[in-house]
Image (cartoon, rainbow, N blue to C red; front, side, top):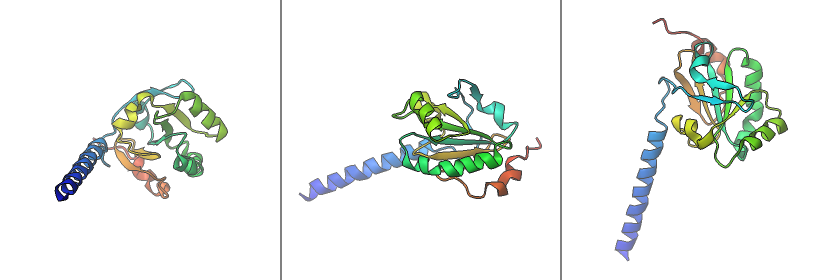
Length: 171
């Protein structure tokens, strides 16, 4: 009986350690690192290439899903950021593509009157590339292409960081 409990505990510890190593590998994109470039189409069929945007202005990525209640709760804060910084920041909300469809994304945009660009991550390729482990997941990239923020909540003090986000490296 003791051996069964120990072996069950060992298995649980092994699974936990395995999952922790997977998450740390997946979320290997750290603040200050170069953002991986990608290209995809927005739901209005316009091509979006990340590297074409961050040299002009910072990029704000939001990874989300239609079925995510926290994503829905973040909408007012995201709309406010888009209204406040829409001219200064390129804003793209990327649906993670898990248990969703482009049709659902279009309806969601209409239902919630989302003013920013939306894209669908077919196969969750970009979501994996960016180490998205839950939704919402937000990433802010400066004009040099470096990640300056990543997290599950909308940052409250974005205006305090605009100068840093828009300052080109001198070399």
